[in-house]
Amino acid sequence: MKKLFWSLLVGVILVSTSCEKSENPRLNIIPQPERMFVSDRTFKLNQNSRIIFEDPNPALRLIAEELAQFISSGSSFQPEIMPYSLVKSIENDIYLSVSLNDSLLGDDGYQMKTNNGQFISIQANTARGVFYGVQSLYQLFPDDFYDNEIRPEVWKLPAVTIKDRSRFAYRGMHLDVCRHIFPVEFIKQYIDLLAMYKYNHLHWHLTDDQGWRIEIKAFPGLTEVGAWRNETLTGHGGASSKVYDEKPYGGFYTQDEIREIVDYAALRYITIIPEIEMPGHASAALAAYPDLGCTGGPYKVETSWGVFEDIFCTKEETFSFLQQVLDEVMELFPSKYIHIGGDEAPKTRWKTCKTCQQKIKTENLADEHELQSWFVHRIEKYLNQHGRKIIGWDEILEGGLAPDATVMSWRGTAGGIEAARQGHDVIMTPVSHCYFDYYQGDPAAEPLAFGGYTPVSKVYTYEPVPEELNEKQAKHILGAQANLWSEYLKKPENVTYMALPRMAALSEVLWSPSKSRDWENFYDKLPSHFQRYEALGLNYSKAVNQIAVKEISDPNGEIMLDLKTEVPSGQIYFTTDGSEPDTSSNLFEQPIEKAAIELLKMQLYRKGQKIGETQQRAFKRSANE
Ligand code: ACM
Ligand code: ZN
Image (tube, rainbow, N blue to C red):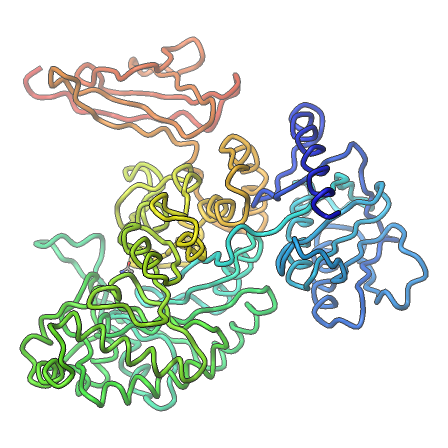
């Protein structure tokens, strides 16, 4: 019966999608719901509308309260919240229920209906599903909702029928707070963004060479010493030209703050996975406790970026230390997974350390790679005994994977493929698509970033399941995650700039069915999301409308300029005489010779409409002309 319902619904949707483009208002929901039907009716939310939740259910009450607050933030009225048991009839209301009993929707799916335009019901099997339904409902409000000047007595919402559920169980965003730390209030704001796009994991990178950021009561030195560095490298700092800002920098989160953040995330159905790096990226810990290194130090909290040779020694004291740290970490974080790092651990020190070499002999290991594998196994065993599982970066494959480890594949997809073939769970986060510290536009026009080039359209094309895997192996791909390393992200506004809108694009990769992926549809939804970012005061990138200018050589060695746009059906008009380009100017169709150009002015058009401002690039004439 249910199957029949689904297939009927598919038929309706096919129809609805085609007429949606011409007649219906576009729905701007990101990530795109699995099935959605839009009727030409509207639902009128007004001062009589109540939010009715099935009771007794404290989780639904909380969702109802948040929804009421959202509505009142942009309206002249405040909806009343009512338990269903006290209600005589549902009229012009929003009804939340967990009694859908539809196994196809799993534990995060939901059904939203605007019943003949009379009332909205959001029903699911779980409160989590209702929460996601409410996130979609938020996105049905017109853009005017975010205009503080407009507070009408009625909001008209499109009447929809949605059946929706996630594609991947793991939908993650990462945040590095070691290279730069961000205030508690911002971490909450970041969590709000994750919730808006139906992410369910925040991977919180808490320890690294440049700072230890989590209070550990057993080892106060970690935050008294390890959370502070003397200064910070400025710019990219080439090998010969390192300039430092000469300003002490640091900070950490107290255990109370961490509890507050974990609770805040839990209310938004987000699990925080803490990362405690080992055996590498340990300079900050070693600066505080030099006995844990192979040489005994002295060590310092690092002031520049990269990979450092001083790592934890494999001596017994290290394990005693790490176990006590992990005890407190487990106390703070209910997450099933604890991330133990494992990446970028040079073996230089271990090679000349008597203790480490002795360990290799007594444990009958082949080399330092097996020693790292032994290290990770041992930590895994400890965490397993406490009911937790480890995640490690893909280097933990080297020397043999710990029996129950989940692998985060970051150096590409090979690590993920190998781990899945070995029957291990995998989270994909390859640098090619998932490193949001990479540029998303022309570096010349963008704030300083790590490097690379990962525009939003590229993120949008990402397919987390590698083709190399068979069906059984593919089941080990739990999902994917984008990483925000903070070397070049000093302030919250830098973080949101790199995240938005790329995390919107990745949310569609992770939540929506792969066959619904449609770049043009996604692009058309962006302006509404940009408006929402603006209303929330969030800095975000408009690089999607930027024209990329690339120098290429033609077969004769002539340097040519190739112009590219991500904008669907985008056309680039250009001039080289300094005049303002418009549709009567040259239309870019093939690479143009660079030599003759001093000033290139470009204007993007789409369907006859100007997109963004005129862009320009100046070139120096070569000396031999
Ligand atoms: C990493 O980017 N070092 C995991
Ligand atoms: Zn050692």
